Length: 139
Image (cartoon, rainbow, N blue to C red; front, side):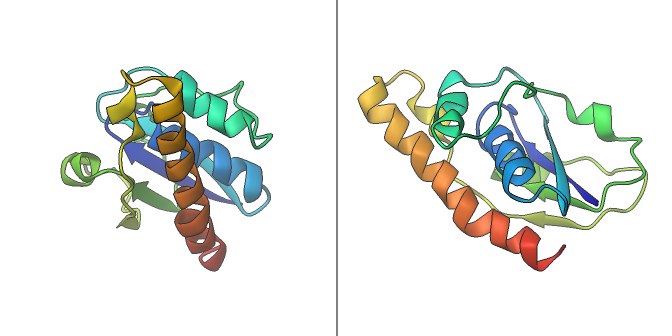
């Protein structure tokens, strides 16, 4: 099974959703982990929109990219925000790195649910449409 690290800035929304969706839909092919250049917390709305689809979320946590620097068995690194793409450090083992960017639903953290949740669902669905097929093609 291949291992992929999904990197974002805060490791609260996009990378968290990608980790959960990959582990849910591609188990047996890929094992996903996520981390942030400046980790913060797991966004409750990200958890909510994952649970709406029956995706497990109990194991999710916001982690620092530094926890993965020494891993020598990563098969791919995917950045999902421009900041992480530009600030992703060099890993000890050369790992193929790609960028598949998504808009940040956390921009709507202060908005009411009826405005914010559709934004979170849209990013979740875009991850399903763009990231999952990419990894299926590279399994």
